Amino acid sequence: MTSFDWEEYLKLAEDFEDKVDDEAILRTATSRAYYAVFHMAYDFLNKNGFTISRERNSAHYDVWDAFGRAIGVNDTWRAISKNGDELSRRRKIADYQLRKINWAESIKDSNKKARNIQQWLTDISKDGPVKIVVPERKYSF
Image (tube, rainbow, N blue to C red; front, side):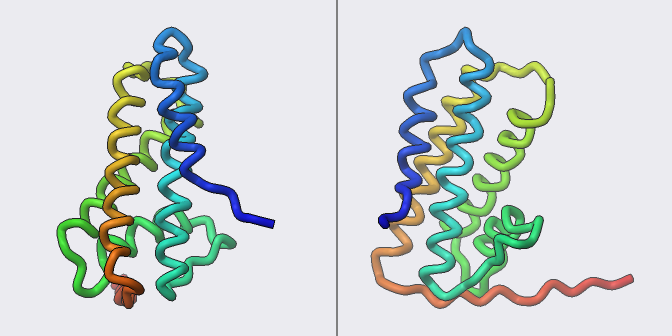
């Protein structure tokens, strides 16, 4: 059995961009764009030896946090983290809130951010496996 190609979600989100009069479709597109790049980023981390448990509620936070806090990260890694966080925030609004926003404008920007993340993941993969080390979070009470 072959695995699902997460880019299909992103293509679907892009196909829905023109449905400007259908809020349900635009909300769905926002969610699909996010999940496409979340799974791409998650798979990138796993392929490079950094495991994030899907059992925890924080898997989404942990993925984007890893890109932002890994030792030796550069601007590309930080951009993946920042854009991933933003897409996650938009996905939560699309899925859980009744807030009125300009969904037609939002999905175009979300798709652009998602394509950027996809390209950045491809770019940082070109040199082969990457050793990913994320320092433990230190909490003080």
